[in-house]
Length: 107
Image 1 (tube, rainbow, N blue to C red):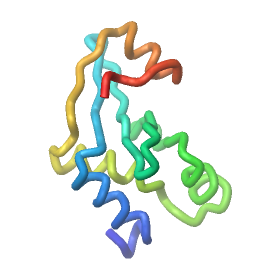
Image 2: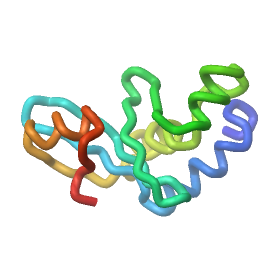
Image 3: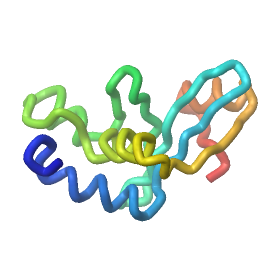
Image 4: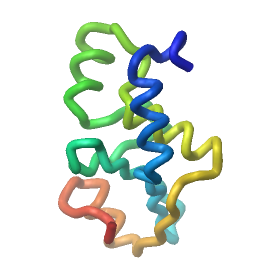
């Protein structure tokens, strides 16, 4: 993992170990991941479109093209693959607010 993803691999595995990843889903089938970063900030991201709103993703992945993904996105992918995601069901209305960045799931 470190060879492919660099230094963020260990940070992502640490987030997985801390159970910092929650898969939020709604009755309509929408799904997003929320990752509690080391700073305590909650990031809502989407593995299906390979996007995270964190500054590291914008800078290292999009701007400088130095990394394939940030630690939050990698943690979400690893948690999902390893079956270690916290699961949370929310209403469609709550999901709309989460996806629009207006609110967080009840974490």
